[in-house]
Image (cartoon, rainbow, N blue to C red; front, side):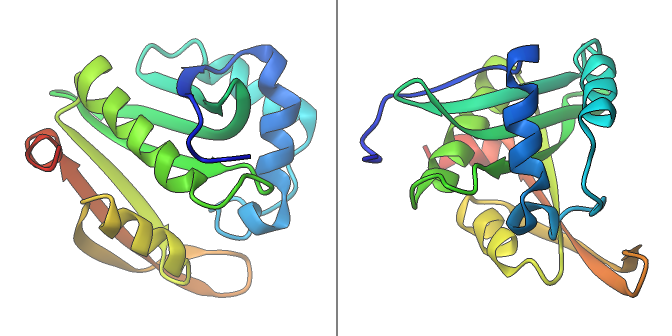
Length: 171
């Protein structure tokens, strides 16, 4: 699939549950998550039912030429348009999908959702996510030392932030 495709974001629906769960449970995605166990369909369905009813949550599917290629979760966490985000591309998505997904998510966050700031976190060993955030214009705001315990060892968490005004200046 060419990356000169027609891109879109749409709300995640119940028809997407199994596909998004398969992406999330893929070892190449799961190893970079805070929760690293394989998630059951029942657990995933309960999460989706609750999350999709929260007006501060934006659960989105990124598509290229109407083919689902990734998932984005934006959650408003503080007054004034402050939100956290998480995302992943489908494990079999073409190279470059992550960048396109990120660009679409930022357009959505700062124009449609009207956010002031988008925050991200990456486990310190997830070098691709750290580079991705930096390449998308995020500023590193800190490191939470030994913040995440995966059942075997502690890991640092790298924190990022991008202000709407910074994003607009780069457009």
